[in-house]
Image (cartoon, rainbow, N blue to C red):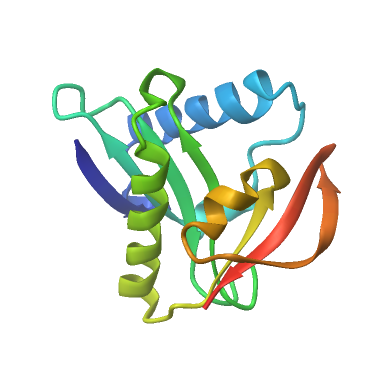
Length: 149
């Protein structure tokens, strides 16, 4: 497996297509949540993802990373997703761990904010995130803000 970090401008058309395909397949289709997946934030996000050595076009895990001030006041990680074909192998833990390391390396900060689906609270707490405030609905799905310092 190979991990990549790219700005929007440095993504190939195939990479961007495959990232969007994974996000739509999981966040819209699998979670049965019709919402506008495409937004302007992709253009200034850093795209962090894993591909298998044998198929470098296949996205198997992905996050979208933002420098402080571009999404929240703090650095941010979002659109955390593991390809369904690769679940059950602790790839989600590796993905979030490496995403945190990437934020710290790129932006020289340890403070990271996320908007997490509430059912993933324990998962994110295991990576040092703590809940901030009350639960809220985003696109009909319960979420919480969490921060890591």
